Length: 150
Ligand code: FES
Image (cartoon, rainbow, N blue to C red; front, side, top):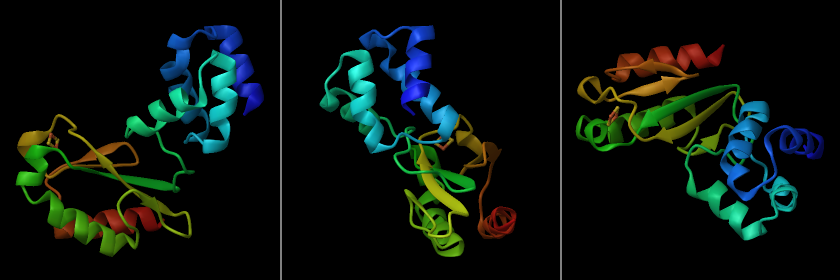
Protein backbone atom coordinates (compact mmCIF):
# COMPACT_ATOMS: atom_id res chain seq x y z
CA UNK A 1 0.00 0.00 0.00
CA UNK A 2 3.00 2.29 0.54
CA UNK A 3 3.56 2.38 -3.23
CA UNK A 4 -0.07 3.21 -3.92
CA UNK A 5 -0.05 6.05 -1.39
CA UNK A 6 3.25 7.38 -2.76
CA UNK A 7 2.06 7.31 -6.35
CA UNK A 8 -1.31 8.82 -5.45
CA UNK A 9 0.16 11.72 -3.47
CA UNK A 10 2.72 12.39 -6.21
CA UNK A 11 -0.12 12.77 -8.67
CA UNK A 12 -2.79 14.46 -6.53
CA UNK A 13 -0.80 16.25 -3.85
CA UNK A 14 0.18 15.54 -0.27
CA UNK A 15 -1.57 18.34 1.57
CA UNK A 16 -3.87 17.76 4.51
CA UNK A 17 -6.97 18.43 2.44
CA UNK A 18 -6.13 15.36 0.33
CA UNK A 19 -7.09 12.99 3.15
CA UNK A 20 -10.66 12.24 2.08
CA UNK A 21 -9.83 11.87 -1.63
CA UNK A 22 -6.93 9.56 -0.75
CA UNK A 23 -9.10 7.42 1.54
CA UNK A 24 -11.75 7.14 -1.18
CA UNK A 25 -9.09 6.18 -3.73
CA UNK A 26 -7.69 3.51 -1.39
CA UNK A 27 -11.10 2.05 -0.72
CA UNK A 28 -11.82 2.04 -4.43
CA UNK A 29 -8.50 0.28 -5.08
CA UNK A 30 -8.54 -2.41 -2.39
CA UNK A 31 -12.02 -2.23 -0.87
CA UNK A 32 -11.12 -1.11 2.65
CA UNK A 33 -8.79 0.96 4.84
CA UNK A 34 -6.66 -1.31 7.01
CA UNK A 35 -5.71 0.11 10.42
CA UNK A 36 -2.08 -0.74 9.60
CA UNK A 37 -2.13 1.86 6.80
CA UNK A 38 -3.13 4.74 9.06
CA UNK A 39 0.48 5.65 10.04
CA UNK A 40 1.55 5.57 6.39
CA UNK A 41 -1.30 7.86 5.37
CA UNK A 42 -0.60 10.19 8.30
CA UNK A 43 3.07 10.49 7.38
CA UNK A 44 2.32 11.04 3.69
CA UNK A 45 -0.11 13.91 4.42
CA UNK A 46 1.71 15.34 7.47
CA UNK A 47 -1.21 14.53 9.75
CA UNK A 48 -1.33 12.79 13.10
CA UNK A 49 -2.40 9.17 13.31
CA UNK A 50 -5.32 10.33 15.44
CA UNK A 51 -6.44 12.70 12.67
CA UNK A 52 -6.50 9.92 10.11
CA UNK A 53 -8.03 7.36 12.46
CA UNK A 54 -10.72 9.86 13.41
CA UNK A 55 -11.76 10.41 9.81
CA UNK A 56 -11.67 6.72 8.90
CA UNK A 57 -13.86 5.79 11.85
CA UNK A 58 -16.21 8.77 11.55
CA UNK A 59 -17.47 8.02 8.05
CA UNK A 60 -19.59 4.88 7.77
CA UNK A 61 -18.60 4.44 4.13
CA UNK A 62 -15.01 3.53 4.98
CA UNK A 63 -14.61 -0.18 5.60
CA UNK A 64 -11.85 -1.21 8.00
CA UNK A 65 -11.78 -4.88 7.05
CA UNK A 66 -11.67 -6.54 3.67
CA UNK A 67 -15.18 -6.69 2.19
CA UNK A 68 -16.99 -9.91 1.41
CA UNK A 69 -17.26 -11.09 -2.19
CA UNK A 70 -20.79 -9.70 -2.07
CA UNK A 71 -21.89 -6.65 -0.12
CA UNK A 72 -25.49 -6.19 1.02
CA UNK A 73 -26.22 -2.74 2.39
CA UNK A 74 -29.49 -2.17 4.22
CA UNK A 75 -30.89 1.32 4.68
CA UNK A 76 -31.08 2.38 8.31
CA UNK A 77 -32.43 5.88 7.72
CA UNK A 78 -35.78 7.07 9.03
CA UNK A 79 -38.20 6.23 6.21
CA UNK A 80 -36.90 2.72 5.76
CA UNK A 81 -36.94 2.17 9.49
CA UNK A 82 -40.58 3.33 9.59
CA UNK A 83 -41.33 0.74 6.92
CA UNK A 84 -39.98 -2.18 8.90
CA UNK A 85 -36.26 -1.80 8.37
CA UNK A 86 -35.30 -3.21 11.77
CA UNK A 87 -37.21 -6.42 11.15
CA UNK A 88 -35.72 -6.71 7.68
CA UNK A 89 -32.26 -6.23 9.13
CA UNK A 90 -32.79 -8.99 11.70
CA UNK A 91 -34.16 -11.34 9.05
CA UNK A 92 -31.30 -10.54 6.67
CA UNK A 93 -28.69 -11.19 9.34
CA UNK A 94 -30.26 -14.56 10.12
CA UNK A 95 -30.72 -15.56 6.48
CA UNK A 96 -27.26 -14.47 5.35
CA UNK A 97 -25.53 -15.77 8.46
CA UNK A 98 -23.73 -12.53 9.25
CA UNK A 99 -24.30 -9.73 11.75
CA UNK A 100 -24.77 -6.14 10.64
CA UNK A 101 -21.43 -4.44 10.10
CA UNK A 102 -19.55 -7.71 9.63
CA UNK A 103 -18.27 -10.00 6.92
CA UNK A 104 -19.26 -13.67 7.12
CA UNK A 105 -16.41 -15.94 8.17
CA UNK A 106 -16.18 -17.54 4.70
CA UNK A 107 -15.79 -14.07 3.13
CA UNK A 108 -18.81 -14.63 0.86
CA UNK A 109 -20.95 -11.73 2.04
CA UNK A 110 -20.77 -8.58 4.14
CA UNK A 111 -23.83 -6.90 5.66
CA UNK A 112 -23.47 -3.15 6.04
CA UNK A 113 -25.64 -0.17 6.96
CA UNK A 114 -26.32 2.66 4.56
CA UNK A 115 -28.12 5.89 5.38
CA UNK A 116 -30.73 6.80 2.76
CA UNK A 117 -30.52 5.84 -0.88
CA UNK A 118 -32.98 8.50 -2.02
CA UNK A 119 -35.68 5.88 -2.56
CA UNK A 120 -37.54 6.57 0.66
CA UNK A 121 -41.06 6.21 -0.76
CA UNK A 122 -40.45 2.61 -1.86
CA UNK A 123 -38.54 1.27 1.14
CA UNK A 124 -37.29 -0.56 2.93
CA UNK A 125 -34.36 -0.51 0.56
CA UNK A 126 -31.00 -2.15 0.04
CA UNK A 127 -27.99 -2.09 -2.22
CA UNK A 128 -26.82 -5.51 -3.36
CA UNK A 129 -23.34 -5.23 -4.85
CA UNK A 130 -24.16 -1.62 -5.68
CA UNK A 131 -27.56 -2.39 -7.27
CA UNK A 132 -30.59 -0.79 -5.57
CA UNK A 133 -33.32 -3.18 -4.43
CA UNK A 134 -36.59 -1.63 -3.22
CA UNK A 135 -39.56 -2.85 -1.19
CA UNK A 136 -37.52 -5.48 0.63
CA UNK A 137 -39.65 -8.21 2.16
CA UNK A 138 -39.15 -11.87 3.09
CA UNK A 139 -39.34 -13.02 -0.55
CA UNK A 140 -36.86 -10.36 -1.65
CA UNK A 141 -34.47 -11.41 1.08
CA UNK A 142 -34.67 -15.03 -0.12
CA UNK A 143 -33.73 -13.88 -3.63
CA UNK A 144 -30.86 -11.80 -2.29
CA UNK A 145 -29.59 -14.77 -0.26
CA UNK A 146 -29.58 -16.94 -3.39
CA UNK A 147 -27.86 -14.23 -5.39
CA UNK A 148 -25.02 -13.75 -2.92
CA UNK A 149 -24.54 -17.50 -2.51
CA UNK A 150 -23.18 -17.62 -6.06
S1 FES B 1 -34.68 6.27 4.20
FE1 FES B 1 -34.08 4.48 3.15
S2 FES B 1 -33.91 5.19 1.13
FE2 FES B 1 -34.32 6.99 2.23
